[in-house]
Image (cartoon, rainbow, N blue to C red; front, top):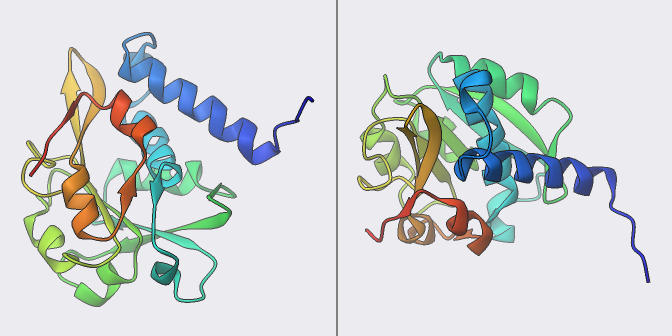
Length: 184
């Protein structure tokens, strides 16, 4: 019996193929702006991580926080306009690394390299928040996912134990396309 993909399913499948092509070296990541590539990754991270139902407290949106001012944040706002993940509308917010309340109100936080991220990781420790960063060795320092550049291409490292400490489950599909999986 044939089943048709929903519009959300088709968008998800196209984005997943795009990310996998980049991760496996089959796509030309240099042709895309780095911010666009990272926004595509973040959209797929939102779709391939499972949050506990209690993380949403009755709210319908998945809140993506962007710390500070960064080109990725601008691209996220464009890429996530009208997007959804796991049946939840995605809402992008700018947040301050020093505002623990705003950080805790997010489900996914992107931390640009200029911020570092150790304070953000600590501020949401034990809360259902996926922390993704740009700084060197971000996943090895306790972030759930960290971007790395390899041969000019954007890839990522995964730290499923860090995600699990925050009550999140990272999909095996996502772990398979990670450049490396760290267990810290």
